[in-house]
Length: 356
Ligand code: ASP
Image (tube, rainbow, N blue to C red; front, side, top):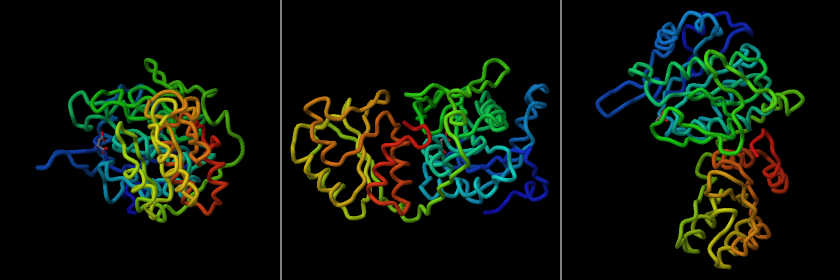
């Protein structure tokens, strides 16, 4: 991990915010094969922020920039990336009042969810942002997103991992990317925004935030994700005509320790008892299996229809209204820790960081 020279020179105080730059479109520049992450982010960011009206510049917190040595398109992120970001934040908690994580949008909500589990009980803001267009592109959303992320990262009332994008602040575990092009690329299907920009004001809604809902000191869980970074958790979305052998091939593989199944509607599967058997066998082998709906909104209620009968008895845990990101990263997080199967199952069903 190389720390940007500006950070080395700075005398950090609790008043400063740390900006962690991991890559993504926001900092990208063209090369012969397409857009790739570009360096020199601190100077480019400062240059962009200097174009804000003075009144906004004066309201910005002081900040340092930590640039990762290997900048990535976030489609290359893995659980080890999530672990690295969490470790970097945890190691600097005493020094900074808040954190901004600059991240590609493609898997930004996955990293946000994972950070929320790893940094449970965090007592200050961690705000992820990125943009749909690079900083230097005309009419880019990058400057607005950076501006808002910095403002919320300096708000001591915010005590959780959040995403700031296109004027709204969303709980990290509740957001999904919904659009490949629009500025408002993220939305939170089952939980209201926890803050927003209204005109020139950045308004936080404390009653919707975890700071209000959770009590006690931070209880970070910085587990070693190496053990679950080799395809140990899978995600499987049902499609019409799925065959039992296909489900079996994936769930029976001894390398698979957990799986997120995305069922139909309120929690239904094709009418084939052999599917229940495959799930029951995998669960009986100690695999952590959970289900959510393919619908982006609403909860699953397994067993409401005959088509979902027997799933809960087969050991499939209900993911309620969790996003795929929140459910998948939770399985990963629970499997990375030395917990009993019962503890894992019980914790999956419990809301740890407002994810369900
Ligand atoms: N492919 C880019 C990334 O996720 C997309 C973006 O940042 O908007 O890094």
